[in-house]
Image 1 (spheres, rainbow, N blue to C red):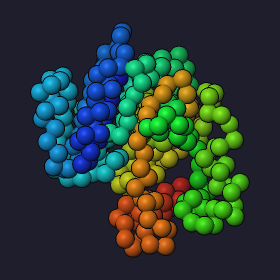
Image 2 (image 1 turned 180 degrees about the horizontal axis):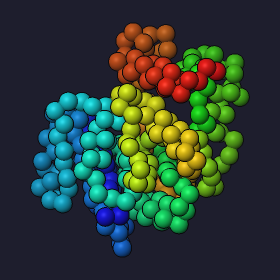
Image 3 (image 1 turned 120 degrees about the vertical axis):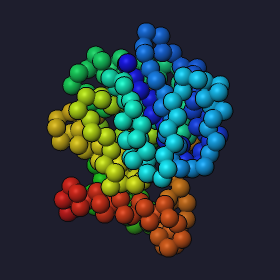
Image 4 (image 1 turned 180 degrees about the vertical axis):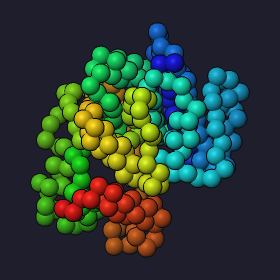
Length: 259
């Protein structure tokens, strides 16, 4: 098996349907692949997907395991040499998966590759970043970022046109192709957020490259749910914001980053 594609669904049935349709319209010529959908105890009825596409694998989790845990559940049944982690709010261009796969096959020193992401209106979505400093989330979520724009913007790598293939610290986890060999999956201490930064940091720790490849293109309907409320209200009113803060603390504690 060449590629295993894993999608974690949580109350996102309509978006998952669009994501799947883009996959079924993709070019997989010459490649063996499988698509695994993990339902994270969302209550969504996904049987209609399997009726329409019997080859689709659906795993129903009894508990919401989070993004990392849900993907790990799919990973246990994956048979591919490469794993494509794909969020349900994505739609892949027909040649995107073949481009990422070909790049990894031809560059054995690369462990993780990700595409250029576009917003639904086809504008660029910044998806590759430098590793965060301990204060980066504060600059991104509060008025302080306006006073430290250079530091805030350098994190998101706004200084290049995003049309060149290049090494990056980490890639947004909405679409990642990863070599299955020796990959242990996501660290489930991160229920949501920072699990993509963590997996890329682990790759670099073992001198395995992470590459942004804009020749592959994926649309990502990214809502940034944890940032929808003002920073001074969100920690008290929004569960996702609290999850983001908890993952932030866990990440910096795990990697012993103090500045």
